[in-house]
Image 1 (cartoon, helix red, strand yellow):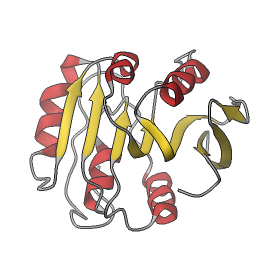
Image 2 (tube, one colour):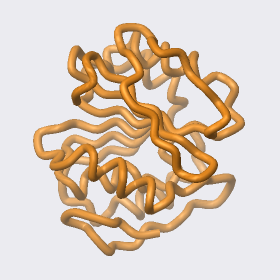
Image 3 (cartoon, rainbow, N blue to C red):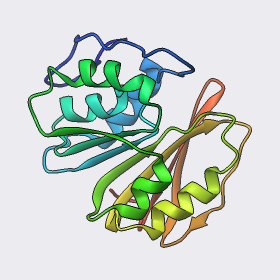
Image 4 (spheres, rainbow, N blue to C red):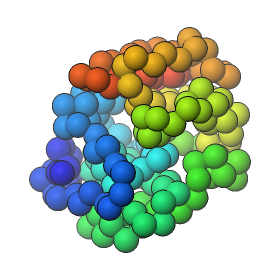
Length: 179
């Protein structure tokens, strides 16, 4: 895998051992093209796996970036993958649910990429919107199988976009449709 745009374009990212579903380049390019320049934006990557999405955000100017991964077996690879990032990036080993309960500040952008067989996607989105990680202008994105649907409203956020990438989709939630 490689960083596909921004400051770190072309840098290699390694997949950690275990079950992982690296974000497709087409999907990453589409998401980050839509988001544009991320200077001044903070970014939270829940279920980060290899860290590829959070590193892409850092490459495009987001800071701080927080990568949350519960699987300790992925930490060595995550730390190696983020070693070249010069802006503020932090790796947290914790379940996403626990991180959200303890969040002390909001993020501009939050990306959730739970395992496709994770049965609690609506619940984790609800926990996200109820946490201090979401502020009045936050945008939340979740990656899931195309066959799954989500409510139009979750907490203070409403579904503003749904983009299909083969067998997966990314659903955007925001307060008013804008980031």
